[in-house]
Length: 128
Image 1 (cartoon, one colour):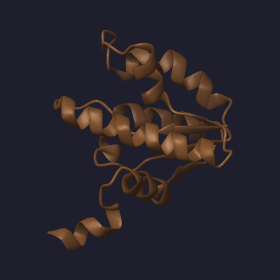
Image 2 (cartoon, rainbow, N blue to C red; image 1 turned 180 degrees about the horizontal axis):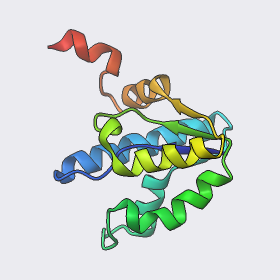
Image 3 (cartoon, helix red, strand yellow; image 1 turned 90 degrees about the vertical axis):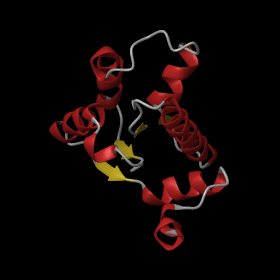
Image 4 (cartoon, rainbow, N blue to C red; image 1 turned 60 degrees about the vertical axis):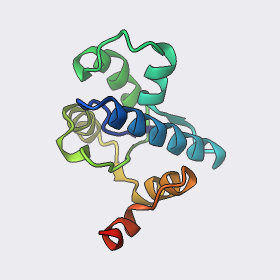
């Protein structure tokens, strides 16, 4: 099973909504390809649609880390903020400690972005 990691928490709720939409689309693409996937951000939104639970890794790690432990891969969506996300850093460290590969999924991110009608990350540099 693939664990689909990504940044989520941000002071701007529109950024969080965008990240959630991209994560859900990427998870859907994996499922369409026949890849078993667990995407914690879309999952957490589905079980807490009103956003009443904390948006902290400290709250969600009791669910997330055991799931990573049974996965064959941690696939990272390298959205802006991925390299500074405390939760994603902890998830990656947990995976590495257990010999679970951590893969940066730029092609998956591009496909999700394009499916949502946004330019792929490859095109952003040419739009400045």
